[in-house]
Image (tube, rainbow, N blue to C red):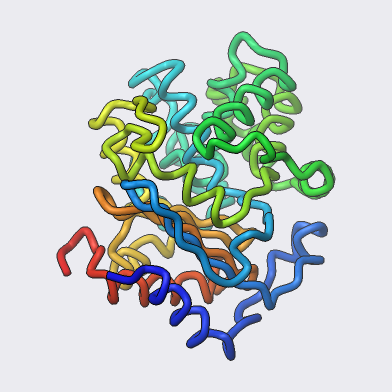
Length: 308
């Protein structure tokens, strides 16, 4: 299978659809991003890297970062994490406060905003905010084998200045004693985590351990156990696209995690890690063109976890 030819073909076929969707203009810094950009990269478990389009342009990965922070938190506290965060799809918007009222401050899963804020609270234990952010950045750099990855401070500041809904979620959970640290400190970590800037190439490399049973097949070391990698993939499949998760599973058939920066990381277990980026979002906040590209790629490679 000629993966490079497949990627080149998909980028060429979708050239006329660049700019589809709507950028996340509620974060002022993201509203400035050129919506006509489109990149895709694939890193296979045997270490080959393929890329097409704007795969070398850094973008704000936003909620894709939640996968890496969850992995870090599980390494720190293990299965005790699930006492404070659920594992069920939410069926509501990623920043909804409705379910928290009914479920006593326990977020449905770690990929909605409320759940990711609790994960940050767990990682913050024993650290100052800057130290926790530094640990997270070092972890992602090690996964991607790239020390040039940085946090976009302008995006972090933009989110801090406008993140009123996230402040409400955090304070609400604090009232149920599901946050242990100062709300400003927890959200400082959360906003900087989401402002991580990566290229499609870097992102596909960073997710490779989830395609290789928890190990880095290039570096030859274990990141997480095979069981944990499988469970993270399961959460990505059921919860990784918010209330569009079922539709993504239906059309693409791979575990994936989206971000409102227009990126999606998808995992083909045993095969490859994939990253796509196109800033325009569909009505549920996932990359419009990126989702189409992943459906095309999954179809042409037969990489769906549900069978070719």
